[in-house]
Image (cartoon, rainbow, N blue to C red; front, side):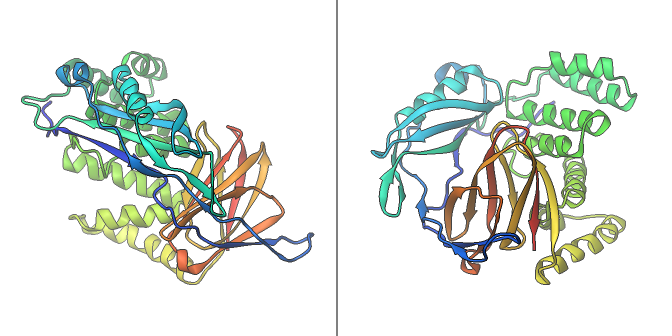
Length: 349
């Protein structure tokens, strides 16, 4: 199966905002009602990033992605680097760690004072212009067999194939994630299915090996999951991408009322709740409304992070508080850090 290739590497830096935002935290019912000051935090900023694509991976036409977790010292040097997850190419993992360790940062600061801080960064190693680039026939055959096993409700065969399939590049990893999403739809949870579709990176997969109709179909599945799980900011973003391409009129007619309802919830500031569970690297969601509170049902949340167009802020989680983000810093993303497996309800109002 032939794909459109590319030759490049990219860095996706998650702490994009370095201007402090200001928020108020107001006590919930049962506690004194007062504004609680939250210290302004500026996240670390890339000063110089090391760029190196390992020759052994280039010669083998291996591409992929690596998510790194690390600390940045008050002098701007990264340390305690670890691989959070990756597409599975060991040479690219080693190269990402080496690149990061040779890079420098403007350190984070708290109230103007440089401090050590933790952060995450994603490296994408992407080959462009690789002649005759193809998804391996053996890989694609296993992928098709996996889809058939799932369709036939053959869990034993599907589990076997998931264990033997080993993606070697971004294109194969996208297909593998779609297979895992189909598996989650059959025997897992909607949250697991959505997580795998996010990994498939349908909107930004630079190798773009999916046929257009199949890519659109998977985006529609993701949109339905975002709506059903109340991931409304993500649903609006997916709808915007889908709406820019030809859609069958019956599909558009079925989806339009749900999109209008989300827009009404946003514009009228109607309250709604989202249930979530913290994974190995945290939990993240776009905020439709600047006011929110969090109720933990099991486990522990240690930190709340807000990434907005106007700034980046984090603070210790306090279950007795509700938070309001200054309207000047609209379009915020919420990230929760805590014990993996922690269950909670996010209330927006």
